[in-house]
Image (cartoon, rainbow, N blue to C red; front, side, top):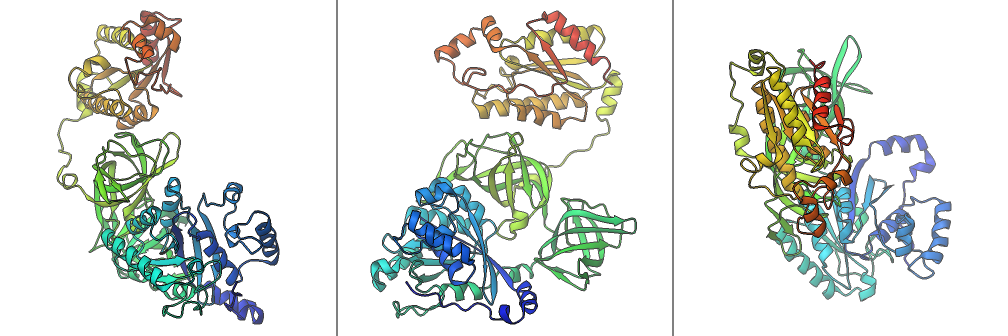
Length: 635
């Protein structure tokens, strides 16, 4: 094994304060290592840490001990153990989770993410790549370009990593054969051209032996390029490119330490700004002028992309977290409908039409994803028809947000073009995506103002609009009780309308089935209709199983506070099944009826309904009277 010859900064021993000052101002490069299983990613990072003297003596002793006990290199040091810290990783000799490591040289600081090679951990790899400036794609010289090599290369290109190093590893195992190396590079170059990778830097290395890592190896005299460390130290980072773009700052918080100061803090993602520059606050569109730029070290004459600052305005402009401050003469777009590429990262598949949280920069909005146009077969680049997205799938779909967001195409801005999707119930990050463009109809469709609004409609009927949302299992008595409540409201001269689940499926929703996606769309449509009826001043009663909390919450958010009244018709499954008025449970138990709530499809009971009725203890008439009594005090 070659001895590490990389020289660390001698200034550490001479003047530690001077070294720390110099170290603080070094540029930072974030990069990932990726590729197929056993291509040597963890070993390479371990070698970089070892050669750059970034491990302590006790760590080295533990590494030597662990290498003998659980290593895969015989009695020699197994550098992969420096990175694979999980017990399961060491036992199996694989990388499972993304491991981040820091090291530094005389010229630059580095954060490297070691990404797993197995296909089932593609989501982990995507997470590691999301903040990277450079990707080191490793190939086992004995195996050549493999499926995961293609997958990871495609993902790196998709996420916008421009600097790619093709590291043909384990050259020592093919006796440093130049012909084999050249064949692998040519094979990869052909694939790279197909997926849009315009350039890459190839180099022959051995992470285990140290060839071409810190210095050019005598074993590859035919290689005239830089060693890996030198390339990483000198490659240009995209920050310089970002600084040439129009000014963008996503507001993270309003800085108000006292009554005399009001500033807006955030990271500048593009361009530069100076006091006196005209800016526009989006999505509102108000303009002002920058009066000063403040940092912890003091005021600045100019701030550029990559800096976190607080800016102050000359005017009292409404601006808060989630707004984007941009150059007045070159603002980004604002829209609420988009086409995007989505990488699905959750074990549960995408629920088409379900409302998810979408986080884009500092903006958080509700979003629904339509049925994907297609998924992408990374191995063949084919576009495949699909109804949803499964774990690790990459697809293209349209999505809509509940309010306009400030955005740019991902190709132009990672900050304003990259987003994540979060499940509203579990709070899990379920997907990540890249915006392509705004849908044209989003720019051409506007709310038409009317002179007679919901207040006038309600005043004419002398009542406050409500949506009484009855939910419960099939056979719980929702429709019967809702009918009784409407009759009593009618006697009280209230203007009402009852939307029943079965009746709606005869017309408005006759095209929908009973899969999860269809049930979600069924409730979304009913919610929109109920909202329109409430706008007309009506008290709307809806009787639907509506099995998922997320969709009931979606309808609640469509309405003003206090207008959505969730009524849980609480009936145990065994009681509802015993009634079985329509014979549906019997069919579901026999397998004749699929996706039936309570049998082979879940029902999520309300956590805190406004009204709960127990149909075991109450007759429908008594339940209706109970609901009316609860409603009367509400204003």
